[in-house]
Image 1 (tube, helix red, strand yellow):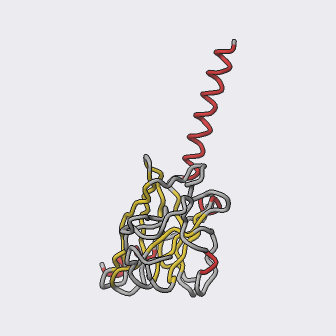
Image 2 (cartoon, one colour):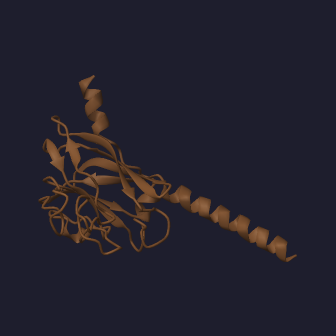
Amino acid sequence: MKRYVLCFFLVMLMFFASCQAEDRSPLEVRLYNPDNDAVGTATFKEQEDLVTVQIKVEGLEQGLHGVHIHEYAKCEGPDFQSAGNHFNPEGNEHGLMHPEGAHLGDMPNLEIEADGTADVELELPGATLMDGDKSLLREDGTSIIIHGGQDDGVSQPAGDAGDRVVCGAISLDEATDDDKPTDPTESNKKEEE
């Protein structure tokens, strides 16, 4: 009898874990500029030992821009300071090139094309969308911030990347929002055709 109860418990545990994964991955969030205009999307997908982030954005200056996960799911303009500091549950130094880095929320720079758009996939090694200390959805969630300048990969506390120019809240509210974000870069492609 105990074996049947244990088997039933394990089956239910796997069922609930798969339901959680379906609710949380992929997770698509809207990206907003300081004027609260939607300028793109970021799609987070749970992978083995990492989360991929597909960023589609428009309306930014050409060149390299720092992009990070920040500690709060708050995107209050115009400066997005409500998002807090970089997501750093391990207490590391900032920077992918820092010998004592990096924050869990540090990512490579985002390259914006001449037309002001980007469509790239980045990775967050060690992060998860499931439960745990390294979850982007822990507590009330986190946010993704794109900065006005390039992250130098070593300066403290944020890579000297300049102003916060785009923000998107990463939360379970976004995961369950029936009104999925649109991709503004798609309308540009249709206009060009």
